[in-house]
Image 1 (cartoon, rainbow, N blue to C red):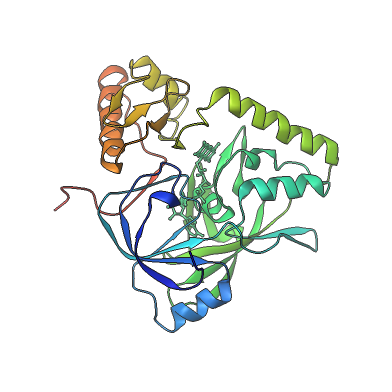
Image 2: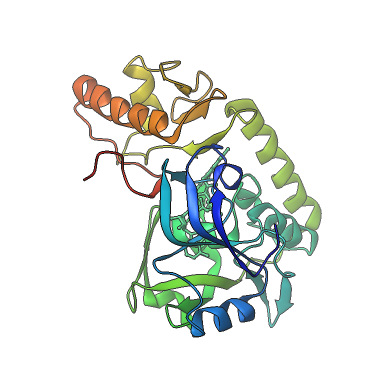
Amino acid sequence: MEANIIHHNVSLKEFNSWRVGGIAKNFYICTDINVLSSHIKAKLMEYPLTFIGLGSNTLFRDGVIEGTIIMMNKAMGDIVQEHGYYYAEAGISCSKLAKHVAKTGHEGSAFLAGIPGTVGGALAMNAGCYGSEAWDFVSKVLLIDLNGNQVTRYKDEFDIGYRKVINNKSNNEYFLGAWFIFPEGKKEVAENAIKNLLRHRKETQPLNWPTAGSTFRNPPNNFAAKLIEDSDLKGFSIGGAQVSTKHANFIINLGNASAFDIEKLIKHIKIKVFEVKEITLETEIRFIGEEIGSH
Ligand SMILES: Cc1cc2nc3c(=O)[nH]c(=O)nc-3n(C[C@H](O)[C@H](O)[C@H](O)COP(=O)(O)OP(=O)(O)OC[C@H]3O[C@@H](n4cnc5c(N)ncnc54)[C@H](O)[C@@H]3O)c2cc1C
């Protein structure tokens, strides 16, 4: 699909890792942030704007999704090393950033290697695992506002937490890139850390199935996967959506799931876990589009 132009009525199935969802009324693949700025400035984009990366943490609902979906393409830009920082545009994949950092003799990036999303998605989610989170390494970010202006902001302008990123200066800015700092280290150590992490993930996660990773946030001092497993839900399915038998916090698409099947399963899990454990699970995944029956 051609980048940097607006397409209409695009199926979103191939733009998310669950392989489900409806139709974007307007869809734009960004490979050039300056062209994107000029298109927004020229008022060519229908609002609301929804920025996405690789859709690996997103449930696009069935039906038509209004406004414009802007996908920051994974082929965007190079990673630039300047003044001790690594600058990566939002569309670069986390795994590419992790490998580049290791190859150039810096440590700490291994956790990013197994996250199948973009830098933009990792910034929006504060993605993390094994004790590290994306914003631990961020110094400043480049954003775009609803008028197409590019703005640089420092880390202290954000409220950052577990899968939580709040921009204290504006609700209407989206990530275009970030400057990261990783500690100097040994290339071999960093590359081995990536290898080990990827091996561990393959052993513990259902990576051969369409999934969006962890569906729910871990409640304080608890693990969502354990609560779901203890509620006897491993392998439970609704339509084509199933609670993975390998990792209970992952929902997999058995092949013919709709977004509605996945959403029904999410609701069922929440009800059952509350009945059994008296704990309310909160979703980690993000929903885009209108809920069926919300009117
Ligand atoms: C197999 C598997 C394993 C996973 N493991 C982990 C893990 O260990 N740790 C973890 O944290 N996550 C994990 N995830 C979830 C997911 O990969 C991460 O949350 C990732 O950071 C999402 O990136 P993305 O580019 O796919 O974002 P998307 O799913 O495209 O978007 C996620 C959210 O960010 C917003 N967003 C995306 N790009 C931008 C932007 N440029 N500006 C503003 N907002 C934006 C979207 O609107 C949406 O709300 C896993 C997923 C899978 C499928």
